[in-house]
Image (cartoon, rainbow, N blue to C red; front, side, top):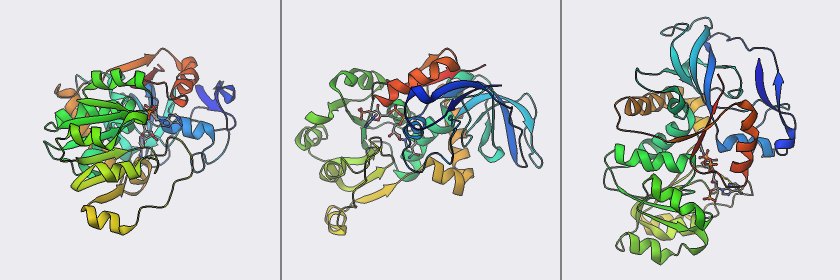
Length: 327
Ligand SMILES: NC(=O)c1ccc[n+]([C@@H]2O[C@H](COP(=O)([O-])OP(=O)(O)OC[C@H]3O[C@@H](n4cnc5c(N)ncnc54)[C@H](OP(=O)(O)O)[C@@H]3O)[C@@H](O)[C@H]2O)c1
């Protein structure tokens, strides 16, 4: 079968389409015939060779897929061959067939198009879990999102209204990306270099931000602490730059500000509590099914285009969510 293979750390020069053996599901696993696969920044981090993302080279990227059940491993119940599903494999999603744990394979409800559903297992589920689980979002909160014009940034903009609504502020790494974030639904967007504490505070009528969702390592943490409202929550959920992550601020900063600082990892939660991730995937699929959530995606027409889309994301030039048509 055809698969995208990353042969060594680096860039697209080390990404190629290869014919490899089709994987078979082990006990508790499901093989999925992939129709669409979502692209995520974690593929880029793996490709760069960031520590901890690739168990061995060559590496098969791709951590979210939508398609149909092709085969079922021993002990799997509740799924049948041919069922439309989404799944979060640990890797190998950018291939004609991917294998995932049954615990992270979720049926797609009628009426949900597989192209949009492909964004559910990792991108949309992360956005849902950031808001509901890690961020304890309640309707009416002011939320500040860094990297607002990307895949997760766009998903957050669409989920907040679906969860009752709130005021959405975003930052972007380059001024030209502000338009994409505003289009996604942000109320105000600040290019990061020009994002002053005062501007963010003004945008909240001086109250500060209830929830900050930050995938920038610790680069923006001082800023987050300064703009958070009393009782505010800050969730660190990435390290896009791939550099060293600094020590956390002294406890006194949190005590004085009545702040909560927490972390989120889809991979960590999927390994330790897959039921919680599967529930979030199910919830976003329900929202897609009943029309309360819509997520525009950019379709990459085949596996051959995936490495170039990874290039765009690696340069920080991607806009919104990219989904590869595999089938
Ligand atoms: N913890 C988790 O489980 C989890 C799950 C999914 C995603 N994430 C994180 O969420 C973020 C968004 O992910 P995504 O899949 O939605 O990807 P994406 O759309 O490609 O977003 C990545 C964004 O990171 C920002 N960035 C900052 N420094 C960068 C650098 N040195 N090189 C390239 N981009 C850089 C860019 O936005 P700006 O320039 O506007 O900042 C870029 O658009 C990523 O940091 C990812 O690691 C975490």
